[in-house]
Length: 190
Image (tube, rainbow, N blue to C red; front, side, top):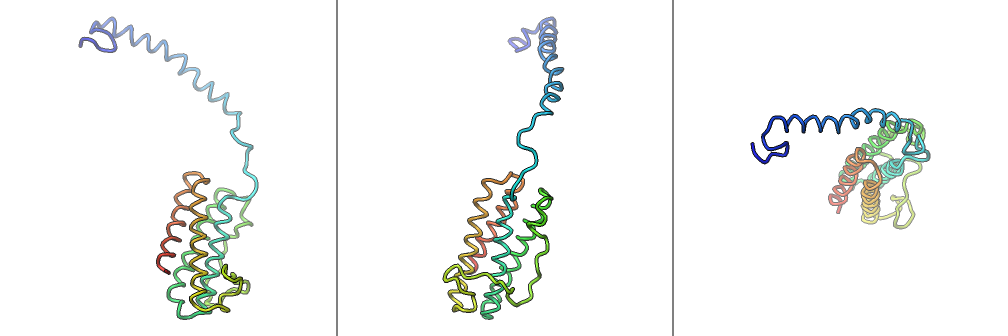
């Protein structure tokens, strides 16, 4: 074994190289735990996060989208077959996002109340208003009402896509799947 990194084949060179390596690495190995113990008292942030969780607006948007889809489906029965799955998916998104908020931030439980009301077929008393004209979906024709749902879903997709840039990687999968689902729903409704 000539020309090796450990020497030119002489066992003495190899032993010296190993000893030298151990001698150089020894202080590092011994200092590592002490260094980590010293860093243990340091904090990288201010402790527990304060303010709303970044997923809370997504929970609110998903619930509003579900309410809008339910209200439009109730007001325009011819759209119910297309909008009922949308409402169910957005309720599922709200539930999954709320569960993640509660898991990560138990102090925010009341902000995302995990109870998502079941679909009743009738719009809730405070049904979402159409972003197009501010009127309840029942007050618009079915095409305008459907456009309001599509626009709301597209806004939800954009909001979730933007959130993937600011949430930790372990949350980005959940948020990204919400964005992808909204994009699929938009494509399905157009």
